[in-house]
Image (cartoon, rainbow, N blue to C red; front, side, top):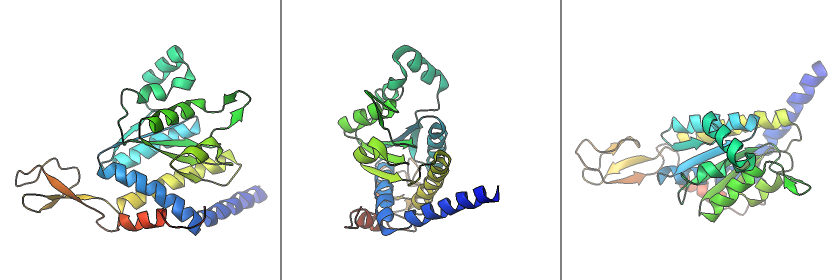
Length: 239
């Protein structure tokens, strides 16, 4: 048993070291930038995944919603999930939920251990592929949180983070670490509103200022500066 423990922890350390490199910092920054931009612009962040990744997607949306970010997990409504699966097939599970809800500029976050791979004439997790195609066609952004060799999602997403492991439990565990890291970075860069009428800074969720004013300007980053994240995301660090 001790050998299993040692091997598991050794691989976890390798992944932690990989995620700490400049190459991965750039990838993480790209993901943060897309999430932050959606937050500031009042867009919705959708999330989905199959199996254990469905739970991760739900967890992610729950954590972001605590910051006042508009989120919607496509795995949470069991009635809608079973209705779509029964009536239209599992491959349409996510895209049919997006059609009435998705708007230009919204973001879709896909959690997938393998990232979507071809199996003969079919694609494993084809329901994610359909959702991604719909979002990108309708001028939205796609973020992939994947593992294994990255799969199709890692190639076609606008930004992605890959956990370099072939172990499903390890990938799923690190996806939870990633969602907490993303939440922490966003929390440290919370946007606030400055009233156009009196200049008073108020909570980002507040619909109006104490002076009665509705119009505002977004003041970026209480603690950090998202512009710095953007510089990292667009730097020339090799991918």
